[in-house]
Image (cartoon, rainbow, N blue to C red):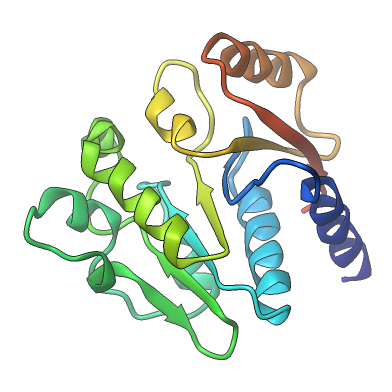
Length: 195
């Protein structure tokens, strides 16, 4: 556990700088569990420091955060984006005692969600959340250039790439870096996580 805490503190130190990094998207070419672990621990660290943090889970194929935090959620991001009358607050779920909130992916199949992030309502949601919270962390699905939507990464102040120790191929990292540079998306850092 000390190794996780140390890694999370290093990420925080890397984020403290001259520019404001309030909205951060996390991307991985591997299994998203290592990425979810990094995001959850970073959110809890900020929450314990009395900084309001929200995780927006755009990995529509998994419901990792609601399972990890044992949240009973009925509606999430997909439901919000598909219902023009739904308010932001109806999909925000607070983690008891952590000063952390989560927007789960919602009820939709992964393949049906491909164009949801391109909805202007998503951009407005992230803008609203950045006014209400000190930190907004966006969890993305496993990175593939075919399915990636630059809208997802374009709404954030930058992206942190998460790889798995001894599992991530260098070519996958270079492919991600090339994509982000072509899309003019700032790379804030790189985390080599061990599951």
